[in-house]
Length: 407
Image 1 (cartoon, rainbow, N blue to C red):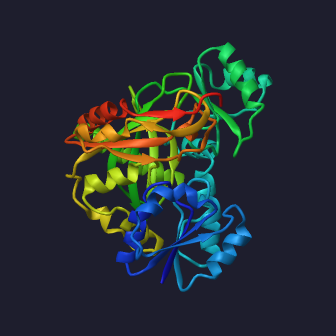
Image 2 (cartoon, one colour):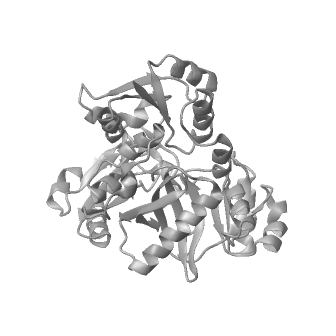
């Protein structure tokens, strides 16, 4: 039998295929760009239970035809933001287990989620749609105030996000937004003061388990680029219970009842406040961090959910495995990537640092203010997330992306 995946996150494909094989199935990846998975595909054994079908995954008709050609299709995994809505639509069309497409459409729209949670008394943050361009400044000042965050309601990888603290920066951000293409629509919300985290969760029929909390180190203002993360953060037991209860209430109110979720929040002086909900496992190396901490292949829960089975991971013990941390490596200028210096010296650092490239020599680096500029991720381990992060930062400091001169 076959379980299909409509694209996937950059890392984790090997573990996903292994989970499908353990369940007695083959995994079939539908992708429009297999180069995204080059690191994972290069590490797979020749007999891995994985097939790759090259198809324009932005073309619903082409995806429909590719799925119809698969032998004994039993499930469709949808683990990305970009393909969450078409994936839900296709699963429903083929009669496969999956979320309600209407609920997925709500979750894909950050502004609608804000409005829904506020209406249901779960979230207190007010957000308003604004028109890109300088004429919207008065609306932002009147409805939201400063400091504020402007963002794309369907954006990913921190694209089209502006943090503004004064009227001059607000006018500049709105003018810049007027020249950008948006996946959704522009909206404004108050800036939340405090450290950023994400709750990594697994739900089944509305019951949610907190698998752990991931720290999120952001770049200095005004950019909101992600720089480093550690997992699992050791919050005091009472605070951890509060985060778990808040995440479960928030997900249920937003309509996410089954499967993984990556719930980004700011831990303010008054408690957790939502940033956004992603109905998937966290990106970058969050899946790897989950597997190491829990000592199991957590992607088996993804296979279970795709087959409409209650995931065993819901009942697992608290994580006792090693903590991990990872650092995203960005170049200091745009151009053509030629490689990295320092990779051959990583073995001298503690924490067994591992290198996960997201680009290859010859790729163009064009965006430096969001995650599209990340050339690779360095992961290291430790007894706690704090120690792992110190090790990852130390090792990452010796690696430098090389960009060709004159580009």
